[in-house]
Amino acid sequence: MSENPRDSRTKDGRTTVVVITHNRRDELLHTLTRLRELPERPPVIVTDNASGDGTAEAVRRGFPEVLLLEPGTNLGAVGRNLAVRHVRTPYVAFCDDDTWWEPGSLRRAADLLDAGRRLAAVTARIVVEPDGREDPVVKELRESPLTGPDDLPGPALGSFLAAATVLRVDAFRAAGGFHPGLWLGGEEELLATDLLRQGWWLSYAEELTVHHQASLVRDSTARRILGLRNTLWFTWLRRPLPSALRRTAHLALTVPRDAASVRAFAHAAAGLPWVLRQRSPVPPEIEDRIALLERARRSSPARQYVG
Image 1 (cartoon, rainbow, N blue to C red):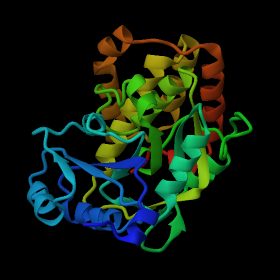
Image 2 (cartoon, rainbow, N blue to C red):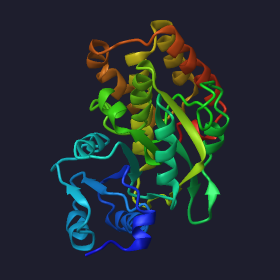
Image 3 (spheres, rainbow, N blue to C red):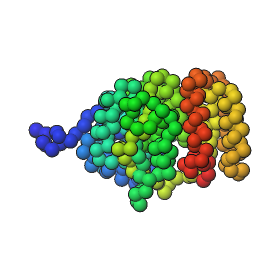
């Protein structure tokens, strides 16, 4: 059977979409419907992190074209690593189960990565649904204080948001993917730093758009605990000693004085033995970028440890 002429004009085979999910069947099915409608017709891989709500059965029934991975346990962000092992395209676009890409954005992201030989990742503008407003983090990305090569498609970044980013698969694999120790919650910062240390650049691209309709099935307090714990672990894994001490003290003084913060610090302290064993501080030029971003983020409403 010959391919539809319209499909041959619009299909783009450079990017695979990877989605991780856990007990969000309805949100995932909505996202997969949106991805199925994309003109690029990307391959889609879903890692079901041991859902107990019938997610896997619903995907098999409604989306037989999707490659469904079932590790049998909740791998967190490492579920993306598992999926990337199956990716055969040069680029991978990550999605959460409550986000989806704007039609045409995957094609444009691939164009940008094709053109940028040392560009590892492009991060999109995020629009919050159903009201269509920009996510507060977009202002931070757009106004990044970092400088980079003139051929970057937008401001240089020091990290990225996995649910709104297209990455070069070879760079992702060479950097080791997401660290299993962090599991989930701000896990991007460590991978981004390791990409920068390997000589890659990260960039915001205003022309790309991701839509986010936050799931109602979320525990914001648990996510805050994980995010703060992982910020502390990243700090001690990669920052030089004076910076690690200063950052830890700043967090201790500024995060909310509540049970969630106490739990986050306790969990971080419990993991300190493995963190110190794996500690590998970045060189001064990378630390300078991290410190510059740290100062800029202190006033960002998207970086408050609340919830």
